[in-house]
Length: 152
Image 1 (cartoon, rainbow, N blue to C red):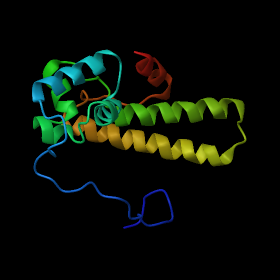
Image 2 (image 1 turned 180 degrees about the vertical axis):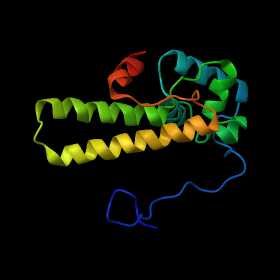
Image 3 (image 1 turned 60 degrees about the vertical axis):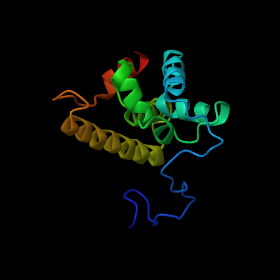
């Protein structure tokens, strides 16, 4: 299937091995992993950064195999979930960066198109999160208020 905003098809890439249980060499103490996840979140890390740190420093290749829960679920249980989901936050930061660039370079037509694409992705994600109940009803993306939201 083709991509939505590019004239190419998806490319094959590496796939994580299928496993039902964690490997023997990995750290599988669920309570310790949950404690590390909470500590890393309190240090200001996002869920993807937490996953990378767990993989690289603590030898946890897959948190779900070790604990039975995803990192987001652990944070939700502990009340440390961010109000804006990470993928939406990253897209909003990208759109704001492009908007800032266009304020200085207003004739950059290629990045005007990239801004349209980024903001349409943001709106589509917001629609999904509102529908799924993760974001409050009636929440909409406004570039003027997005910068304030991201600094919190």
